[in-house]
Image 1 (tube, rainbow, N blue to C red):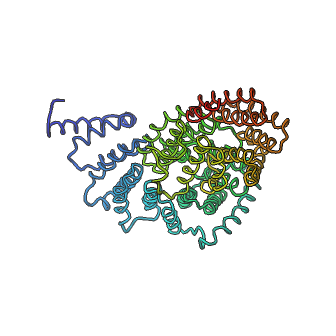
Image 2: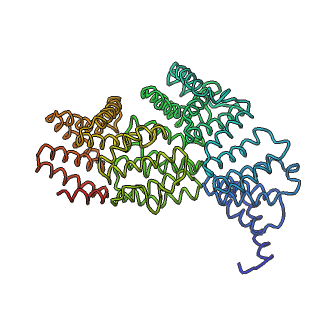
Image 3: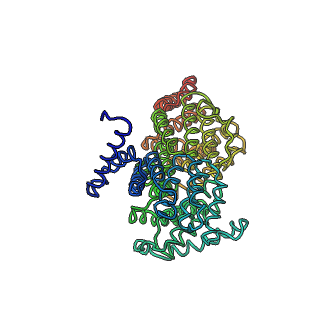
Length: 587
């Protein structure tokens, strides 16, 4: 088109209007974006039907995770409304402002989102249910853009009060209330057979749907803020809502969250597994619900890691990334991406180089969707991986600096805590790592209960403790090492598939400490065979290294060298070049 100025705009408008009115509904829907773009490029008229068209385009763009386009369509739709929009086109106006606020939050444009929200909330005739999406958008920006989980938590509690729900009479009673509620809820759920949950019907009470929506958000924010007892209370209340009113879109999440809570609070894997099975059955039956990505993360992350191998869980978590993006759940799309590309691959010793290759694209994803907490977790992990390829034992570098970090969020601190321990284990002396293991104790679990690095973090504390115990003979190392072995043994006996060779290896270390040499050597061989079969490069290297040290202590020089060579080979495959250099100096 060689037309310019007003003639070009008029021509584009004419084409757009002809297509919009001339095509059937399906054809318009298929080509909605180019049609609306033509209308917008040439539209100098404030026509309500074109405001409707922009709303449809914004909704479609949002469902495709094209948040910037959705923002533009919502803004253009609002610009087409007349001055008396609230009286003449109230429903359309409300929908456009709500859509605009929601997508601006996803883009991290807090100021614009607040402006949209304030416009709606300033209207005197807005009902509580109509105002709810705007208030939820505001809470989301507080939590995920500003990363102020405590503030968001109080905001959600206030919204529930406005809906007539008092989470607790006083925050001081939360510990007692949550434990009592947990016991009652478990009893109610266990009293019903699994077939009962498979036959449940969806909820049809709009008010209770709204209450469930707020509870579901408060549930996650409570966990992120480190308030585990409030997290449990919210999960119980969500389960009770399901039992009383029917399945809502957060029911699967409620059962999955309570499953994780039962593990955290009671270490009852059997009961937790039943709750998780209910969650998975609901997820499959009500596949269209909007929080598939979040529920999948909880079901196949913290909960299922107790009963399924990490290798089995990774594909499902990976699939949930696109599910989350399609549904607009950018928060858990990012967590599923992090878990499937970094957390679980690290657990199973994927090559460091392959994980490093994923970091830039994950960071771009987090930045594009304004997921600050996930971006910070990535920075910490990225720096950890980079330092593992060198001999740097501190969490310092050009991606992240622990010394300059001033974040106080518990989830973020858990990532920093884990990374520091990993660097000391692989790049420092074992006694240095053992001293830290004594100092920090269960700090990681307190910061992030039942996190995705729960098992490997404890295992990697036990390894240097046993090494220091054999080296120094000090009781402080022996006692703590034996305590951690007892914990791993319990997990292994409960059938956890991810800790079986952990248990074999730590048992060998204990037998060596007890001078039961024949039994120790047999158990070392079993551990080597098991970890090699699993193919976990970092642990094949680590266990061979420790076996080599044991054989050296027993003056079995040639056999020790064989194991040391194996250790070096697998550290090379993993990509821990600083460790390789250190071990090669011993040959």
